[in-house]
Structures are given as structure tokens and as C-alpha cells.
Image (cartoon, rainbow, N blue to C red; front, side, top):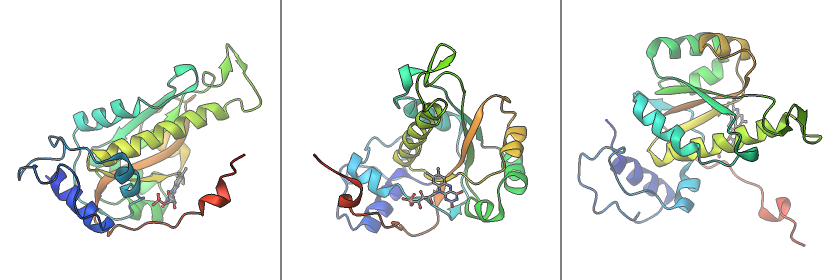
Length: 215
Ligand SMILES: Cc1cc2nc3c(=O)[nH]c(=O)nc-3n(C[C@H](O)[C@H](O)[C@H](O)COP(=O)(O)O)c2cc1C
């Protein structure tokens, strides 16, 4: 199994960070699950990048559950928590998703991923007052919550030593059929979770002045 120590060291080298707190005291052979040194949040959000090349790895049901448990800390409309996760960690389910439900480029980018996680939300709850949409955004509040939950999920995964790729380009009907997702749930993305086999790469971002107006 890839160790958390290896992951943190790799990430810190790629980021040009000389030392990450906790690395020195970490004994060899410690798995990333057992390691106790969480990255500083600023390092974590810098280190989380979309990964499109994965090394072979497997993730346990327990570790996936832990990541989702942490992602459940995400805020949501009136704490409705309408986001749902369908994690394919078995070879057969993943092979079906790769061959039937993802376009070639996303299947190639997520090849070898330990998990392919379909993220959905239950409509008619977030953004609603009873049966009535609370405002003009209506169902978009469910998608808003689902996006927030997804960001918590990818950051929690990164903190556990797993890289991710959010894939919004997918075949909805096929994903839902393969993973037996209830008809009424709305699928947002399929998130690949795996061990990166590519160098750290940061997609450039807009200057803050372009997106922030302070009055
Ligand atoms: C809603 C959403 C859908 C996305 N869909 C895809 C996709 O289908 N395929 C892909 O390769 N990347 C996809 N991405 C990843 C974005 O391209 C990526 O987040 C963006 O370029 C910023 O790079 P970074 O994640 O490395 O910081 C998606 C991201 C989001 C948030």
C-alpha cells in the first residue's frame, strides 16, 4: 500500500515546500490511513489538483466511508443533506462505467482509479419550503449543496492521500443503471479517486482582482 508519508513527501517536493509538519516523526511503513499528521489546510487546498493519470490502487469500503463521513461536514440548505454517493470500488462495476458510461477521454483519465464515485442529490428538499421552491433558484440549491459536498469530498480524499478527478461529462442513464441509482435522484458528477501517477500540475487561476470586488 502507498504510505501517507510518501504522499506528503511527494506533494511537498512538488510544491517546493521544504518541510511539512509531522513528516519527520512519521515512522516508515505507516499507511496513510494510520498516519496522524494532517496537512495544513492551506497546503491541502494547494495540493488538491485534478489528476488524469493514476497508478493501480485499491481503496477499502471503510476508507471510502471515512472520506464520505468527513464530507458530511459540508453545509447544506437547512441541513437537508441531500447529496448521495455511489462508490464503485469493485473491478466489475468500474469496468462497466469505464466502457459504457464515460466518454473515452474521461475513461482514459480515470484508468486505474481505485474508485469511481457517482454523486447525486435528492430533489425537492434543498431550497424548498415544504413542496414549494423557496425562491427563483429552486432545484439549483440542491446542486449548490451537492457542489459544496463534492468539494469537501475531494479535499477529505486528498487529506487521506487520495487524488481525484471530478468528471461532469458522463452518460447519466448508463451511470444510474450501472449503480442502481434511484430514478428521482439527480446525478451531478462521477469522481475518480486514486493514486496519482503524474507530476503535480497547477492549472492557472484568474487574478483575485478579477473575481473579487470589495466595497
Ligand atoms: C463540475 C465539474 C465538472 C468537471 N468535469 C470534468 C470532466 O468531465 N473531465 C475532466 O477531465 N475534468 C473535469 N473537471 C475538472 C476541471 O477541468 C478542473 O477542476 C479545472 O480545470 C481546474 O483544475 P484543478 O482541478 O486541477 O485545479 C470538472 C470539474 C468540475 C468542478
